[in-house]
Amino acid sequence: MRAGVLALALSLAGCSALVNPDPGRLGGDEDAGPSALDAGGADAAAPDDAGHDAAMPGDAAMPEDAAMPGDAGPTCPASCDDDVACTDDACVDARCVHTPDDARCGPAERCSPVLGCVPIRCTRDEECDDGRFCNGVERCDASAPGTGCVAGAPAVCDDGFSCTSDACDPVADACAFTADDARCSDPFMCTIDRCAPSATTGPSGCAFVPDDERCATAFCTVGRFCDPTRGCRGGGPRDCSDGSPCTVDSCNNGMRTCIHRPLDADGDGAPAASVASPGGVDVLCPGGTDCDDSDPLVFPGAPERCNGRDDDCDGSVDEGCPRVPDDCGSAQPIPLDGSGRGTVRGSFEELRDDYQTNPVCEAMSGGRDAVYYIDLPIGLSDVTIDTLGSSGDTVLGVGVSCDAMGLAIACNDDFDRASGTASRIWLHRLGSLTGSLRVYVLVDGYRATTSGDYVVNVERRAAAGDSCSSFVTPMDISGGGTVVGFNDSFTGSQSGTCQISSGPLSPPEAIFRVGLRAGSAPRFDAYVTDFVPDLYLRASTCGGTEVACARGAALGSGVNFARLDPTVSTSGTHFLFVDGGRGGYSVYYRP
Image (cartoon, rainbow, N blue to C red):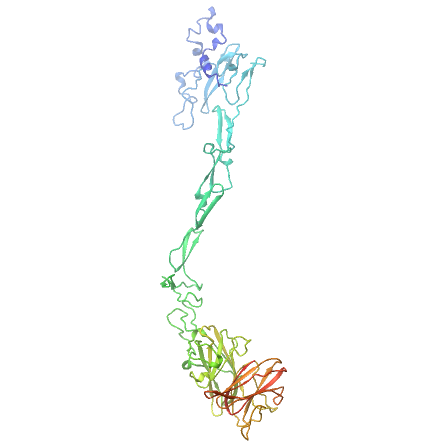
């Protein structure tokens, strides 16, 4: 090993004869002829060392000693001569190699690559140095066999960092510490993991450099940063707003772009033609075609519904539709089939408020209404009119003339309080013996905010008789509602216990069947302008036991009134009598 003896080696190079003098080499043999000293020195004349120990003229062009033109790789110096006479000096794989040649030394000598020719048996440690660092420091041991030289312990190369590959490089004749980035890894994808002992104080030698760019993996998330101890952190959604209320703005990660789609709030496939800005001002949307983007049934090309709106966005309302039965001028018929039944439907949204039903029903003002009519044939008819199936809260009115006063003759609101919002009116023995009779039907919303659809159902039958004869079945009004009838006879055969006879003839009466339950509390109110009404109720049969009787009286303004609110003790069919005179009447029955 060269350490510590390099200066000594340099002082002894070329003077190995002094270590172990050779009389022949020193010229002590008179018969030997000219001495080697006279010839210019033994080393200079040695034929085997030519081109190795000294740079000979012909040695400069040797490929192993000098770099060839165009050779871009590592090269040896111009000469590999180490000034040690007993070594073969050569350029091997772009490095100088010095191979000891004991034949160049005396009989009792060997060639040391550091000191030159030395005694075969070592006398000091320096004579054992083989000139190589990696195999340790050799020493001389007098008790050791052979040359007495003992090999040293191999050099230990350790820089203390776990991320380097530590080894002794025999070419460089020194320790080599090679950084290995693969030995550095943390669980965070956003750091650059490198083996850089000079940049860190940790025992691993690893440096983890945060790289914010590695956190920018999602286009639609911005502001992410790399925390070397926690990974990618923070960030928020990319602002893709274009500032227009006419578009729906979104971000697409896959396409790495902001998308601005035309607003289609109702999802009917047509973009809005205009939208309201935050300030409440309508903003026109370029290319928009939907004139009502809040209703999926309204768009260009949509079927035009008869609802008072422009459904197909062509600028016209209800084109091709029949007129809405909004008032008496546009009243429409309720056609009846062969069995006397008919139904019409409509929507309160397409109507205006034109009329009000009779105040008895206490409907609020402002409700939108429709007007229909029924043409009753010659003769007398019984008719049931109801709004069962309506989604809106309805109030019914009837009249024989179509005007504000005529449509308020009688009304009904919620015929059965338990049923909800449907109404019912019965017409009893209405008609003419000389021609048809037109009866107008007013369908009114209960209040100004009433919306939805209405349904009007009509059923006409032959008029039932007002008699207790076993051959006559009185009209059934069970369930509740309003009766609008006409006593067309001049005399009657029935009377209640509370009536006072006013002449030799008994006044006519109307008779109705009513199903009642024991313990129920029905109420019957009669309003009449043609006579003073009397009301009485009998149980079981038309001529059965009287349950209650009420005398009528004048109410004012030409209207007479009677109220009957009996106590029902038995369940079953009962009979209600409207007595007192000839003419029209209205009875309001609330179960």
